[in-house]
Length: 114
Image (tube, rainbow, N blue to C red):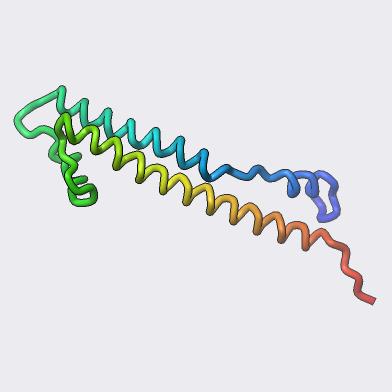
């Protein structure tokens, strides 16, 4: 595509923007339920050393453990962590998309040099 191409201008104007709040809610729900399910799976599975690796999350999530109660705390911690990460990713995407869109527009502007 050439710089003055109408298709390039159309694509540049219509770059999709992410709604950071919606992305935060969805990723928060997915990570929260994921940690909840992983914890419950290990509790139900049982064994001599239940959730040795997953239990290491207590270094980052105070009070978390691989137990029934810990699964609900993990749901909360996972939701908060996922929401923060999702919001940051959406914000960064929107920032970069806007920056690229603005640079494309400035490159497509005809210069008025005498």
